[in-house]
Structure formats: structure tokens, C-alpha cells
Image (cartoon, rainbow, N blue to C red; front, top):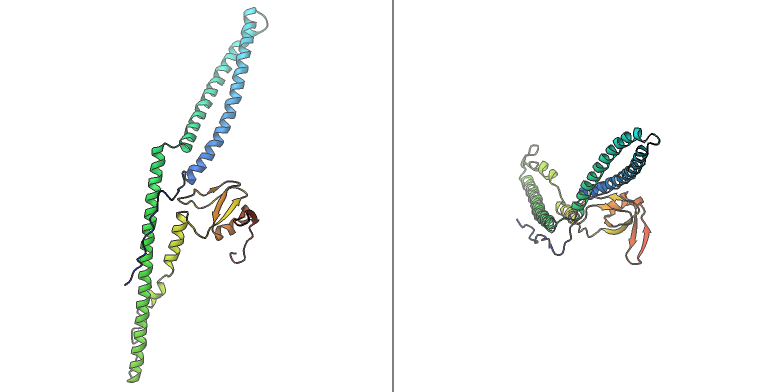
Length: 270
């Protein structure tokens, strides 16, 4: 049996540019940035309140020392509230520092961490390409098997003609013609083409993808080359199927004229 001898695709780490952060990591970064912004608001509010209480404490202590007003009565209450608000302020500051540390880890990986990610991505790409080679071989085996079954059917037909010439009596399926019918019906076809397309998309190399810009943020399937998060105004390459599903959220980029055209749902894709 002749198998597909095409060479397996070997990813070039210098040519391919993988995503620097995963979709999950990008979403976590967005969440942390939002939490940090809220925490900064709390810190600012408590800093303002603590400063007001410090001023009030000084004022009340002055009254108490001079013997005027009710300063000696209010000072303990102010000190108690000031102590509590200061503790809360310190807690918010510590929480903010923790969030900012996590944000820094996501946005500024060490050279070692970045290198390890690229190495893992290259290894995954090699595995995907190697598996594609197996898919091609499997598809060729199925083609050969279908050919063998077709040849068997042709031989059975020749046997039937020859037996008819000698007036041979055959009972139902007397030539065992249907033995492999179920197997033939179960054999899939076009597996290699489907695997080629899947691998190309997984590696971020879909040759049929077209450029678009996003009207609003949306998520796509993550690939090794792109984490699948498209922000407002971001550019993205989409297959016709994805473009059809996202028609209301994107605008097509006309590569020749450099202008954007509305994306309409194509009846052929509906």
C-alpha cells in the first residue's frame, strides 16, 4: 500500500510567533485590572477619611487642652474611629499591592518564563504536525481499504457472470458479496483535508482567513498564535464561517482599497 510521503510540517520557532499570553490569562488580567481600579478608589476614599480624622483629632485635642468645648469627650471617639479607618486603609493598600503584583506577573514575565512558554508552544506545534502526518497516513489507509473492497466487489461480479454462464444456482448472497458492506459504509472519507484545516487554524496559519476589524470585543477559539480575544478596533483574521457568525460585530478590511466594508450574512453560509 502506498502511503502519503509528504514531509511533516516542521514549525520554525524563528518564523512562527505564538501568543505571549493565553486567553485565560488575558481574561484574568482584565479582571485584575478592574479590581485594582476599584481598590484604588477605596484607598483614595479611606486616605481622605483618615486625613479628615487626623485634622479633627488635632482640633479636638486643642480644645481639650484649652478646656474649651467638649474636646476631651470627643477625642477618644475620634481616636477609635481613626484607628479603625487606618487599619482598613492598610488592608486595602496591601490588597492593592497583591493585585498589582499579580498584574505585573502577567504583563512582565521573566525571560525564563517567556522562553519556557515558547518552548512549550513549539513542542505542541510539533506534536500537532506529527499527528497530522498520522492523519494523512490513516486517510491513505482508508483510501486503500476502499480500493481493496471495490476490487473485491468487481471480482465478485466477475464470478457471478462466470457462474451464470454455466447455469450455476446461487442462493441469496451465495457469493458472500455482502460480507464487508457494513465496513465499507462505516469508512469515513476526507479526513486528511479536515485535519489539514484544523491544524492550520490551531497553528494560526489558516490560508483562507480574511482580515476584519472589531466593532465590539468578542472571543474566538484560542490558537497557538492568538489567544482569541479581539478588543474593540482590533484586527483579526477570520474564516468565512466565523465571519458569518460575527457579522454584526465586525467590519471587513478591503486589502486593495484600504477601506472597510460592511459584512453581510451570505446565503451560502446560512
